[in-house]
Amino acid sequence: MNEPRDKERLTGVAAADARFAEQAKEQFDGSVDRLDAAALSRLNRARHAALDELRQPSFVGQWVRWMPATGIAAAVLITVMVMRGPRDIELIVEPVAVTDFELLLDNESLEMLEDLEFYSWLDAADLDTYGNVG
Amino acid sequence: MSACAGVFAVSCIREQATGAETLQRESQLNQFLAEVERRALRIAEIGIRDRDEAMDLVQDAMIKLVRNYAARPQAEWAPLFYRILQNGVRDWHRRRKVRNHIMVWFGRGSSNDDDDYDFVAQAPDPAGRSPDEELQIDEAMQQLEIAVRALPTRQREAFMLRTFEGFDVAGTAVAMGCSTGSVKTHYSRAVHALRDKLGEHWQ
Image (cartoon, rainbow over all chains, first blue to last red):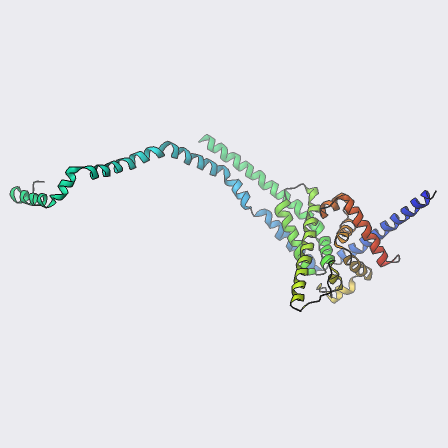
């Protein structure tokens, strides 16, 4: 029974709300237009400072930019290491280790160390007798 | 060697394309920020009643938008920008509330603050406006600012975004980080509270 009247009342409320919002917007826009030159200047500077962020590449951006070159360099390095690395280790480490081991186990070398004084006298005597023949 | 040259050429072309895109994006961002900056400053200023602080919040919002969301579609910038700004305003109030609590603890502040920022509405105006500017501001706008400032936070945000910035319900929901239903509720309550407070003859 009261439906049309309720609808009319609701429509009236909605219209009043809309009118109020429109007036508030007008007031607000007026206050925006009245912003002083100092505020506008600061806003301008703030905007340009923000836009400078675009020109500064981020850490992630730099990483992405250098990623292909870094990847190629890493691949080359790994390839070289895989192809040459183990052979170099064999060449350098193994002979030294074996030589040290042989020195420790060689009985003749130990006897030579014990008679070191005799051998040095023998060298000196040879030099006196035959001269420095090399 | 030819492969290396090819990679270099592709890299150069991509670099040029990226540079052109950046310039275009910078131009679009500049235009967008120039359009919203003044309204954003007034909205932040109404929220915290301090122009210097409001200016800092607007600049922070600009920087965060450019740094984090420049690559997003242009249509998303406005809600994202206001979302960052509203978060900044909320954080500002939170920090101020903590500072006030600390001052109260040391016996140097007011203990009348409640949870809904009434202390801001009651505080003296530290906005830094010149006397001439104060005179210029319409009395009706001053009444509106005081009434808006007294609203609960979410109602204030919904009202300012919808009425002052002109967002639709969906855009306001994105900016506030809530559902469209919540936006409708907050906005409706805000308008009724403001009309009740300012009266029918307010203009």
